[in-house]
Length: 96
Image 1 (cartoon, helix red, strand yellow):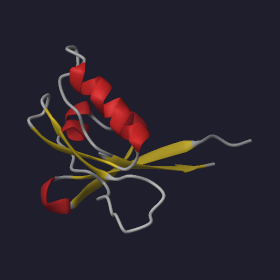
Image 2: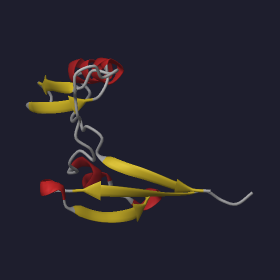
Image 3: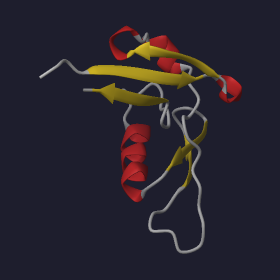
């Protein structure tokens, strides 16, 4: 069995791909300033519930794609130790 490598893709403001980096070398400040990797879509009859939530922690809307994601978002927003919330800030790719 070979080793597993993980690469993270990050977008900054205006959706521009900044870089692909090795997961172990991605600095936290780069992740904190990332834009959501995907945007949510909704259509009549879909099987999950996407939406936006106004977060008091970040004083802005945060997107979510399911009720489970919304529930975790609510927990994070009411936790006084949480300093920031990011919605899908990167794409993680692995190769075996």
